[in-house]
Image (cartoon, rainbow, N blue to C red; front, side, top):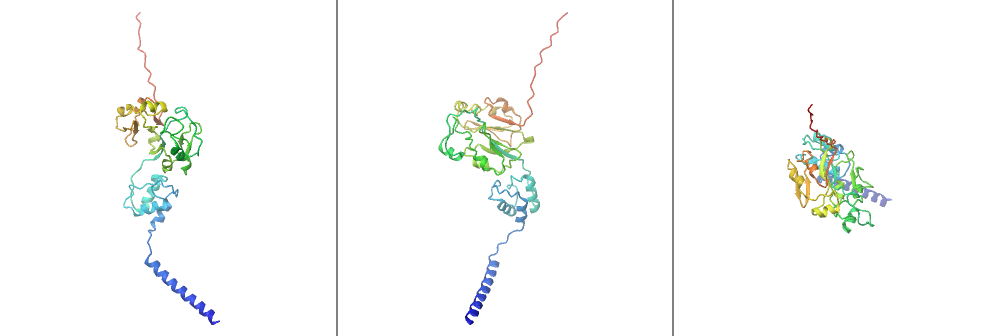
Length: 287
């Protein structure tokens, strides 16, 4: 009986000492966490997509609280309204940011870019890209196997079964950048949505020389430079036989679209162009 009591008493003493030690240790090594982190996290969309550049909304909230300024921090899913809430919680200000969305820079449909062979391997762009150049003569174009579609958490991008080119749903796209990272051909980029969702961009990434690019795809950029020469706003640059339109300089004048010989420059959501009708001279016959 005494042995049992001694054992119980020993356990009680050990437990009490352990509790005291743990208490002092917790106080000694306690890490203070700013309560505003929870508030900021609650204001975020909880998508945990990584579009902000940080692994998860909790990490992004922590960075926002510790940062001196929110100028270089942005949640693409929540957009400006969410960042305004974050700024209000932290007593900081934010700069207005233009809405953006993903853009697929390839117009090489089956009609424009005929298939020369058929891929019969694992249906993933990343794997196919590492095995060979693709089913067409253009080694820069979309493989059409849908890695971008699988990566999107918002159901905002789908491969068109007819054209085999991904299409972005403007209403669903959050500019998280997951599809950008998923594309091994680097065909998808985040661009400004533009006023009234109007955008102009070169839908091609081919760096082949003109004749080769033209033979591989009828709407490929041939690097002729006509768009570069006609742009009045210095919004177009030429590099490696490829034109690129900078959306921060483009004024949407569409002059580049008119001179492109291969129609590789895309104009979206613009009103129809006015057709100029030349009036015939009025001839008055004498009596």
